[in-house]
Image (cartoon, rainbow, N blue to C red; front, side, top):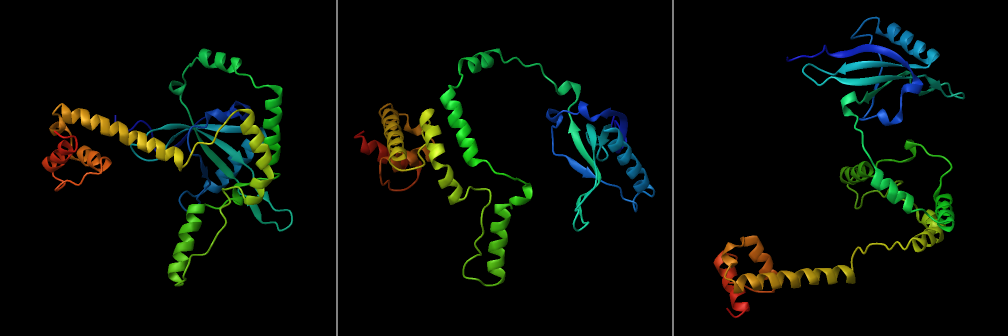
Length: 273
């Protein structure tokens, strides 16, 4: 069986929009619209289907095979009406269908969370902690949000570097990374954040400094002890060259070369063997 279905969309049925749940969305959606050049008459058909779905508040359930020998999936065509700017008359939202991938019946699993539910019931926040969480949200909430407010910082950095090379600039153009909170917003919510962290005894994980240095020293000491045990047991020959090199560096040894036997000789000499 090389082909289970013909390529394209095959209509199964129409369902009310209330039957479409947000958790049914299992993959990136697509937006489809007609192509009169590829299929003559598709615009009229598409427009009539879109208007009927919008008027009746229904979506189309279809099977979708994107190309030959591809896996067939279950999809929903969610109608979207056209929206125009009242001042300029320009189109702000295009008409069409959102093609949303849906799960099959086999994809659903009956899971039990009895233990997790018991733990959640035991761990209830106090009234004061709820107030602190609310204050934190109020301090960091924004009035309006849209994806168009945030540019891709990786793309901005790339374009800035490319512009500097093309125009022979000494330094690339600086840009504002809108995916990070501004210094003003951080200062505005700093007190609420501190009170929230102190109430739940949340400590920021160290990103460097004394804590990491101490941990690194502890790892070196453990490695040195392990190497000494291997050396006294006469098992150094069974270790790989990278492990021996790391051990030699940790013990600050200077072997004659980076060959395995020279590394073993240097480690044995260090421990007086």
